[in-house]
Image (cartoon, rainbow, N blue to C red):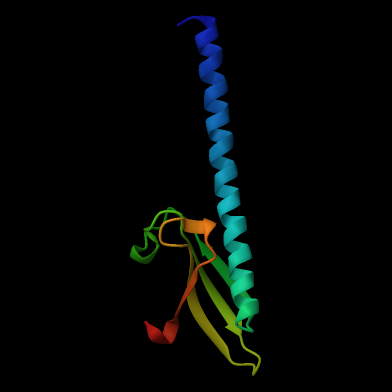
Length: 107
């Protein structure tokens, strides 16, 4: 391998890693935005939230470009509930504004 090819390989590898990190950060920033918008639209206050990391393979989260979050919310009447929230669309993933909640009592 020539020195030009080695440099090109190193540059490509660095760009690929930087791109993967940027996409990962964007996905969670977008999911946080969608989660906060969902809570505001439905008049909930988020008490606690925890994102399910992609390494955990939940059947519900296997669709490409989805982020799952477990939340504790409080409504305007002060009633607290827990839910699993999936942020994604059918084909465009996090490029859409779709948020689906599955309440723990519904499971």
